[in-house]
Image (cartoon, rainbow, N blue to C red; front, side, top):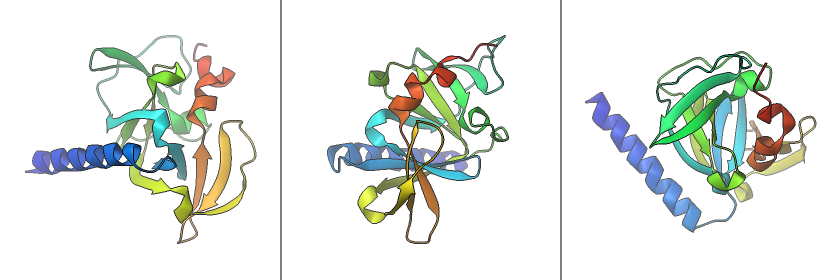
Length: 167
């Protein structure tokens, strides 16, 4: 019974992702990591899936969780919260792997606490430019006043800290 509910959720999310990519150009995937909410351009992601089995990679930083086989393709799995210096993501049934689009040149996925859905920027209020890391683009607030940070996945995938997973 729970398996059919999960399957229905995944099918619904996949359908919404397909509709969003055909619709608005500014659709963003909303997810939580390290207690923060993030917006990532839907075009910069290829899929969202439950966390598959991981194979650890020796001599890597603690945020490098390992490799996953996603439909015959090896994907480096990065705990996004730990990468940002926050506590590691706890493996729960809501945890997801957000796979970066292949066009970004990185066979990587971000382990996040949970995916909250899709949003367009027009429904949000821009607060300010995000300070700090070059992959954080802007800060928005939703209708309930919760902060959402725009995550530039292309800048993240090309950044030196993200590319240097070895110790």
